[in-house]
Image 1 (cartoon, rainbow, N blue to C red):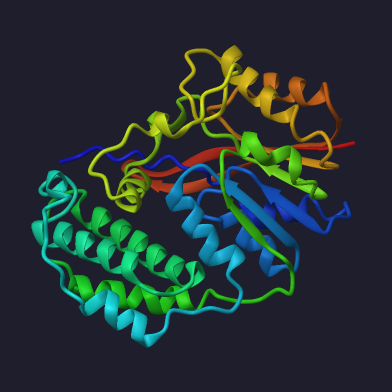
Image 2: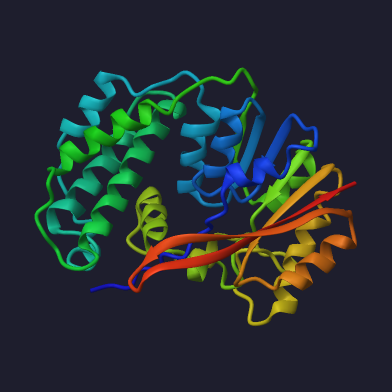
Length: 317
């Protein structure tokens, strides 16, 4: 079968919040927001949340969970997406017997076409995108070992996740905003009180986990994608690119930190695969270190339970 890189950012938002309890702030910016896990936690606690991400699938995640405050997927829209059947052109045929069954690949094409035709707001569309992402995750998880009959049909799975995503919609009375942008291009223009930075790994988008990769391809309606190609190249190194050594990786982080000096509080998250001491010394060039703490997080693995070390550097002006 296929390889799945399950190594993801595992920082605990509640643990981060606990270590920020002695600082005052009202607004948060997450420039590498991924699936909005961090931003969603802080939105629920009443903070203004702003996010940005260069990947389209992550933009739709954040649109649905962070910016959207009142719109839910209507029954009419749900019926259109689930039940409308357009001719299949086998757009995702290369995925058959690698990640999905033939039926699943066909439904992914049908849903993509149906969502694109929905005459609704982007907030409502985002809920359908997220429901499909969750369906992709469900199928890939099932198909990891061998292809098998699923407990629910494709339509039943999508219907379930649409209903689930609808329950996540809420209004925290804040002007939350999300951007589909290269964060290097806009970070200096988002002067929130606090900025949370969990940098992409040294291996950049080349090391992106397969589920997120498939979601990005599906969103763009392509069967394969050079993930590094989504980055706007510049004269300086940028996070998301692939780096062969720690010095170049730290230089890419430094390039970003230079753009966010107006943000009063920095929270830089890291894991045991990142050059902690170099990162700490870099932050000291800009702000005072308020805290540097680590936590070990257990998670299941093929060998049983493994622990991943995660840490945060909190720096203030």
